[in-house]
Image 1 (spheres, rainbow, N blue to C red):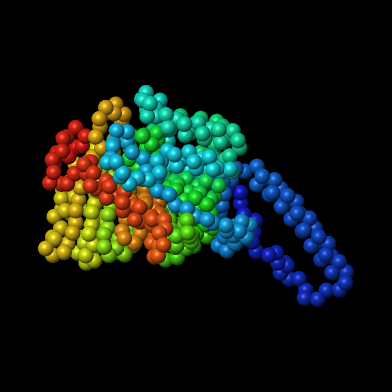
Image 2: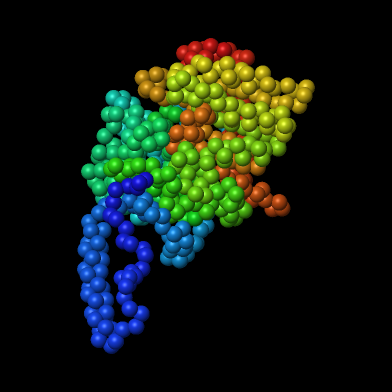
Length: 504
């Protein structure tokens, strides 16, 4: 049975009389039956008291969802949430990004809120709970044996979390059991102060890793984006994400994805063939959340991967990406760390042209101007470049087919002593209609076996009076800033090999 070990459910069927009882009985039979019923009720009452005592002693997952042997009615949990906490959403979305140190841009270039500032503000807002899903944790320089001042922001973040735990703000963390930061003590330090931590064996469950990166704070605020819980994500790696404030509808929806990880991190957990209905989502691609974000009409929804971690109603991450592509009519800009029309981690590798074909179809069939910005650093697999050249070669301006490809290179400078840094780690896409911000690189494994999340947002531009800039326009400006910077190099260009495996 696809369940997680835990307290058993009480029977849901009503008690029935034993077969063979007569349909009519004399008065003394009624008394006898009443005595029997009273006896059964007494036994049942004692059983309920014992069961309640047992539940009080069991550590349950935080917040909403548990995995039971039988599905709970969808309406019961959702209705309870709506009735007990009336919706008072005043949603606000803020883009957040980080820059590697010594990566200057031209004065006046567009920018988003600094990621470290956004994270610290989120922690300052926390009153009750913080739930974090992250591939791994490494917030101190000592975690990787590096003594560098750029680790101070990560260390300040860890200290802030310790202070929140001391104030009885609960912290729950779901992380990958196969995380790369083997020497990090962050989670042990937090657990000693009361944080709940579960290492999710995703490789045994789906064949991938827990690669998601998001927070849910007080079931009101959300962060999601490319950044891991790593000090290098704040000062040595280029990241992009989104903060959504005061939006309980979306926060509770993303919380359900957190709960899929949480229950799978319990001892002896198994992946259910069908998720219980209390994990289901009613916010998705076909029925997105509608609301005002800072007064701007907005639609938004979260997607997830892999399909095995998408309960009923949850849009699959790959479907979200393809839908944004197919809706584009003017431009389609993609910034991603890795791009492969194949598998990356399965052996032998398989050809998987789904996203590659979608980009070509947008350029050819929809007349969309496609731009793809892929990272290059010292750990880039050189086999990516023939695929990039193939996509670039598809461009044919005389036939109205526009496909441009560049690589983004972060100079090492004097930071070469910091391992696995100096790279653009962002994973997003923007069209004239929508912004997509994700946590997955673009190859088959990230959508079929590895856990990830995506956020799709569309905002209406103000028609008459000036108003807030729609998020898709903000993201377009950030992309074009990077695209036109001297860190972005065309495939026919030349670049020194010390910062990137590619030789041009």
